[in-house]
Every structure is written in C-alpha cells, then in structure tokens.
Image (cartoon, rainbow, N blue to C red; front, top):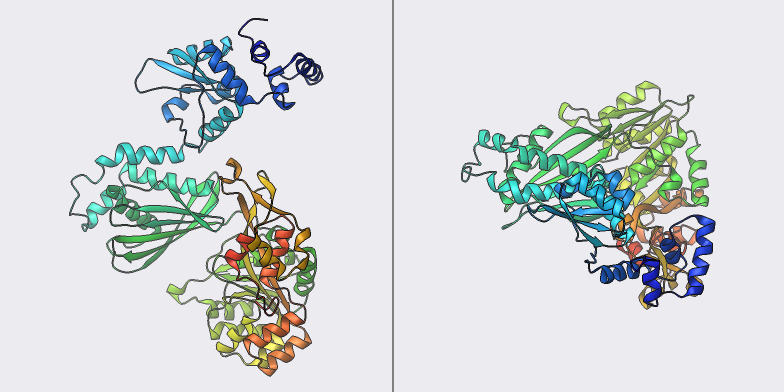
Length: 577
C-alpha cells in the first residue's frame, strides 16, 4: 500500500483501526463500492475528515464549497458536465491565468487530471473537497437553467454601465424609452428573470423602485424573497420592456395601468398579468404568473382530509345549489374549484366557467374569460351562459349584487353553481351576502356549502426532523387540543431541496360549513355574525386554526406557519375564532 493511498492515510492518522478496515472490506466485497465510501457509510470516517486529511498530506488546499460559492460561466465551459460528474471534480480558473485548479473528490486520480489537462490545455493544480459538495455545485451550475442568477449578475456587473449612457434627463422621451427597452441587456434581463421565476415556482414578480436602488422579489410558496435587481440605469428600461410586452402605454407613468402577455418556456405556455403603480421614486410593477397548462391539482393534494373530502364530494353530487369558497386573495380558492371541476367533469355534464382570467385549462370543461373593456363582465357572461343549457356553472368570483342575484336564480332553476367570495371565514359569507342585498330566505334556499380556506407552507420532506416545541406553541395547541403532550412536532432544517427555507410547497387548511336545516334556521332568523359563528362551532364546525393545528399534529406544517395565516384560538371560548 503506497503512502498516498487514502486507506493508508486513515490508518496512519488513527482515524480507523484494522478491525474497522476488515469490516469495511467485507462490506465492499458484498456491494462492490469504493472502500472510502463504505467507510463513510459505516460511520468510521466522515467524507470531510477524509478530504481534509488528503489535503494536509498532499499539501493542497481543502475547498469549502458553501452556499456563497459561485462557478462562473467561463469555468462551467472548461469541462463538460458528464466529465465533471464522472470524475467528481469542478474547475476553478482565476482571472486570465494559464492554469486551472481542479477541486476533486480524489486528487490522486491521474486519469481525471490528464483528462482535464487535455480538455483545457491549461496547467492543472489540484484541490480537494467532499463528493457531496462537488456534486451539489455541479447540480447548481451545470443544469439547463442554472446560469440564470449568474447571468443576471453578469448583466448588472458588466453591461449595465453602458446602458442608459447619454439618456440621462431624456427618459421622458417615448422614442428613447423604446430604444432602452429593446437594448440587449434589458431584453436578456427580463427573459432570464421570467425563466428564474418559472424555475423557482414563483407566483408573482415584484419590481419596487427606491430612492437609491431598486428591489426585485419573487413570491414563492406565499413568501417574498429577494433576487438580483437591475441597476438604476436599467430599471426604467426593464419596466418599459415589460410594458411593451403587455401592450401598455409606455408614455404613461402617472396612472395605474394593467396589461398581460404570454410567453413559452420548456414547451409550456405561461400567461402573465401585469399591474403598474406610480410611486414616489418611480413605477412599481407586479407580474402575476399563471401556468395555464399546469396539471390541475387533485383535492387530496390541496389538503382535504378524508372526512372533509367525502363530505365535499357528497355535496358536489347534488343537482343544484351554491357552493362558495371564501378567503383572501392568494388563498387557493380557485385551485380548489378547479379540483372540484376535475371531479365533476363527465361526458354527461355540460360544465361552463366564467373567469378572470382563465388560470388553468381543464379538458372536458367549457371555459370563458370575461373582457370588461368591451362590456363582457361576470353578470353579462352569466346571463349568456344560462342560455347554453349548462348543468354546472363555475363563476370565478362574486363581486357585486347583480352577479350574486343571477347565481341565486341559476341555483333555483336547477343548476349547480360554484364560486368564490372574499370573507375571512365561512360564517362571514352569510353576512357578506346580506350586505350585498341578498334576502336571507334566498340565501337559505340556495346555499349548500361554504368552505373558508388558507394556504400554509408544508415542511420539506428531505430536511424534516422532530423538534421540541417551545412553551408558546404548546400553549396555543392546548387551547384546542388538551392531548398536546403526546404530539410530535416537526420542522425543516433547510436544505438545497427547499432553498434552505425548511418548507416546500403549500397545502390548504379548511373551515367546512355545510348548510344543514339548523344553519338555514340561523340564516333566516338573521343571527349576528359572532352568534352565528359560536353556534356553528357548537354544532361541530372545525375552525381554520383547529384544522391547521391538526396538520401540525400530522407533521405537515408548524404552529408558526398556521398562526401566520390564522388568529390564535380564543382561550375564553374554545375554538370561537
């Protein structure tokens, strides 16, 4: 065994003993895996210990490839991905030097060194790191769209200085704005940012002007996160570029504007709704991203437990009546309605929707988008739809008295109507309908089900671990669930799979109020909102926060996440909130 043999080094350093080596060799014979990997798997030595030992012995650097490490475009192009993976190595090139440093799992692999030298025609120096870190870098920087963030920075760092030069003081000129918007770095920045948003599963992109700098943020799983912003010289060009794409007036920067456009990425058609707002330091712009060709989520994926799902499907099978989804903007109401449509669609049913906009395409469902600019609003569209012999009608949102009155009449004439309404909880829907001018007897006769909904982030399955809850969390849970001492609380530690947030994706928490005879009596009697809610809970309605805490018990989410979308339970009257 040579002095440079990794196993010999481990023995000399006292990291392993002969008995451990014998056990590892037996396992290697059975699995035919590298001996060093077997030693690590058996827990005799960590990959980092092995790498650091090699670095000391060979007098080469050990490189920590942490989250801040970046592999530049030039370096990625030096060695193809398949070669980098085969030999578990990445190239690092400094400035314009005639040498390259290979960060390797096995710096004693002469074949890997010779291959890199032949590919790069450069002098090769060696460094060492762990296989996990090297492969993570390859995953991050070699994949198809991995250069997005880096290229955005390249635009900011290298090209932005020349953009806008000579345009100072002339950006009120529409022609100059158009020239700036079509400049190559601006076009690339917008394109790459849209690609990054799709890659990161973002629902919105926010452009926010400041006094000294601009901010760009993506909303992912309900939370905003910062990304590389354009420099001041590019900002107005980026905004103008988006306005051109969305068919908006590029000369108007004093009034709020709306527009939309569509682009294609990886063969998918993506709709983008654009809204601009004049602010103190410039135009603020928000892009809402809608993947119309994304698969419609099933109700199980949305977060329905078995009992609620059974009840929901039973109500959906009724021939007529109104089903309402309530909650704030962005709480997943429309997604739940699409899940219901997917359950309902059948060759025997004529299903018609009227939406603003059509967010997903569903085979077997007739979908219509309103166009207020030409007088096609929800009420007008709904009147026309009812002449098309529908069995089931889905209204994207009930916004006014006229729409709700038509929906009520449709229900009374034998149609099943599904829609959404903006209220904080399920019981508030009846007071909201009353405020909109609907008579109580009409509400009682037509309503079948009201579901209030919120979205909570789901703990990342790859970094989920059991944790000891703090006293505040235990107190919140105990207000509704006295058996909290037997619960197992979990939390995500954060990993590359979830962007180091500890969460990956979202699920709905639900407040499910079926309109029974007792509920109809309360509607007809005109009960006040608080009394109505208290009685509904006494009759068995599970509140949003209670449903959320049951997901905590199941290990799906955290108490902190539930309380971020729901108020804590009322400790005086258990569950009254």
